[in-house]
Image (tube, rainbow, N blue to C red):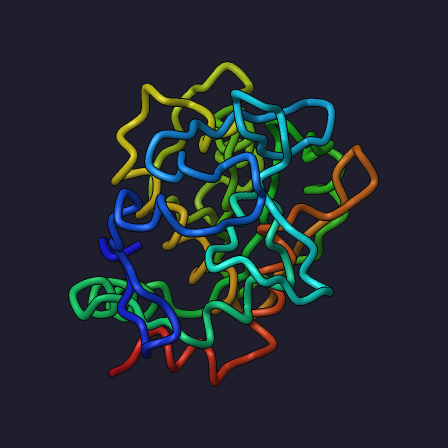
Amino acid sequence: MSHWFRTDGHFIFGWPPQALSGRSCLPACLQGRLDTYEPAYSRTINNFVDRQTQEPLSFDFSDSHPEEILVHEQCGGGLDAIKALRHLRLLPELQAKIRRLLGELGTYEAIHIRNTDLTTDYVSFFRTIQVLPSHKVIVCTDDHRCLAYAREFWKDRLIVVHGVPDTGGRPLHFTNALDRHETNLHTLLDLMILASATVLHGCRTSQGRESGFSLLARSLRANPRVMRHLLND
């Protein structure tokens, strides 16, 4: 996190886990193993568990807990993730890069397509979108095939900010061969691009729900104060 964000004091980045291992913790299965446990993605709960015990890496947020350390390592932040972003600012060099990029993009409409672990009929969806003639289009996606189709469909109206690697259908965050720094940078760029669009187009996936990333972008777009906080000192 410290590679991308500064905090207002609600978070501490880089605390060595070995310094915490002797303290009481929840989930209890991590007691004494905070510096050695390995997270693993479980298809049973569609989220992360402790590889050794298969216990979910989270706790009940609706209750108080006496333990000193509470561990929550899960995906799917969605709308709730905006609560964390309120207490973060991007690093100055990243702020400048994103502000410069958004200024250069001008007026555009943005589309988010999730098409790896969650899938989307983007061919049909593109045909339903009515984009104003004066607007450019940006497609933020995790699928290189979708971006290739967008180039054909939108032609010279499409702005491509960065490419998308061919992961064979695996989500970007589960593809270890990728340059993690570059992947995270592109993810942050996509989030800011979606949240700053004149019009934001999102759609439900074939699984019947909108992706958490789309929900977060919508929430951020509806909270301009949080956007300003992220992008300005």
